[in-house]
Length: 290
Ligand code: MF3
Ligand code: CO
Ligand code: CO
Image 1 (cartoon, rainbow, N blue to C red):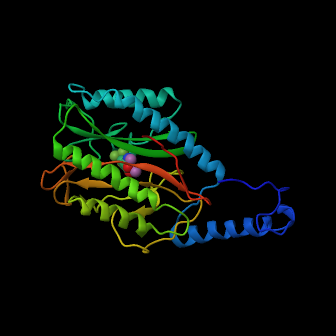
Image 2: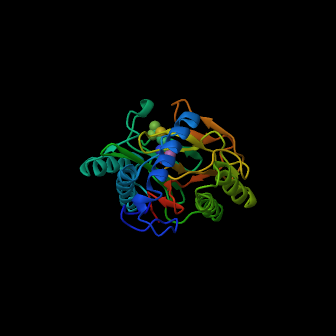
Image 3: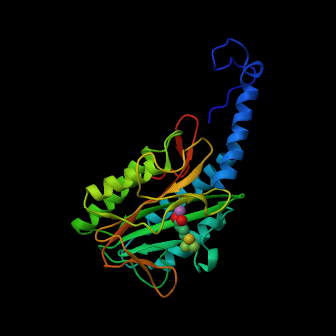
């Protein structure tokens, strides 16, 4: 968010200094919005200093994903990736958010092929042709950021590559809707239209979420929906968009371990995730991986 200096000209065009003109009214309207969003939706809007904290956590998450991208090779175990993520996070003064979160046993989620999300790292060794989502969430100086990417292990089948491309573009279309005045439904609508338009399905049970002060906070951000539905986006909202896209049906099943979510029909699933802030100008991605 660009800050107007107290002594600069007021943006309303009065010709007066900002502090002598609209400054107070604007501060009050932001305070009213904070209160309204908290009372009505339990959403805690973020100030510039909070966004800066989440941006720093996000920068570390991006660097972690870049680091793991080099590890994604046939023969590498998901537990090895978990250890590297853990070390890298701690060595950068941060804490891996997944570890012990509601009892999750590892520092990162790694979801291979038909695993939709929340895969637990273990002995499994990556194989040529796999697609693997690595979902990194870090706490840095009291702020949390969350992002994931799906990687291809060596050469993958044409249908796997197509699915990864659909998931990637689904996220992009969702993020394009993030602007003050749009709604949460606009995001889901854009994602669902793209993914279903390309013959894939969208998981319903798992959604994007507010993030920053906590790992998961309100609002929920579904990856399906209708234009114009849901909460209106306002500056200071920070949340994830993280569509999970299946090649087959959208139904999900959670394994005995209580975490691993897989497609019911065994078809492949892919996901990409970013943390994004709504600003007065539009939006800012706080985990800008590419
Ligand atoms: N990172 C996941 C998300 O995008 C949540 C993982 S919860 C965990 O929301 F406990 F499995 F880490
Ligand atoms: Co998330
Ligand atoms: Co995540």
